[in-house]
Image (cartoon, rainbow, N blue to C red; front, side):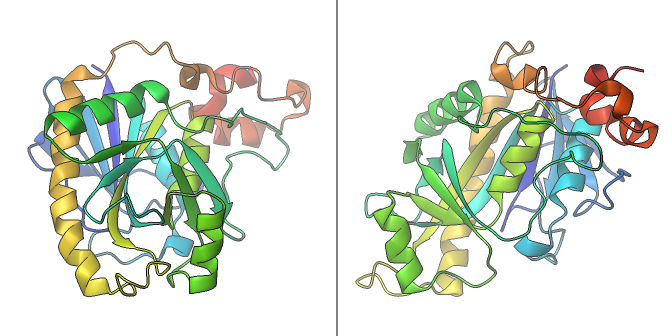
Length: 286
């Protein structure tokens, strides 16, 4: 049985239709995840769900313990990870209500931890293509079957928040050719790559960022109304994708760490080997 992880963003605090499910507490060397994980099954696939901001939406983007969240997914056996996220649109053709499956990121965050390594262990994973191509194409395929308006590919600007963009920033990101803007997915993508998970984002466009003066500035009430519709579509896409997930992974994601750890193994402290056992144990030796 393969295992799918789902990180639910704003508006998605529970996966529907999961069978034999229960909330599970996971301890990690990096502290507490955002919440307990809901573990169940659907169509012969084990599904692990985590509400990114906690049930009741209690945690700011800047407060998220990304390492603990992804570590918990890996510890629970997740191989494929889908992150659902509300975003603003930076392109007129990405209409609020559309879904974008991005394939690139730009980092505009400050001081967030986006690696499991350090503290005596150095690793450099390839991140030129930060999402799993096989998983992103599967999500686009099932989305179009629903049908939903899907944009496959695009650049996600990850900003610090929690405030929305200034108009000057919004114009700047558009000049870079970016497509959408959000506050969470970049660190998740980085850590998923280090954990050798197949990662993809379902970015739910809820508004035009403030560059679009004809549309009006971002209003949270309008965002929530569109978000509720988008969340239902995202759930339907995930349900359709589940029975089509590959039971064996042949993509580069599955071996992302193979040649990435460059520290001499004899210099790695025993405490770090223990801390990283779930993430990189097969590469660290005894």
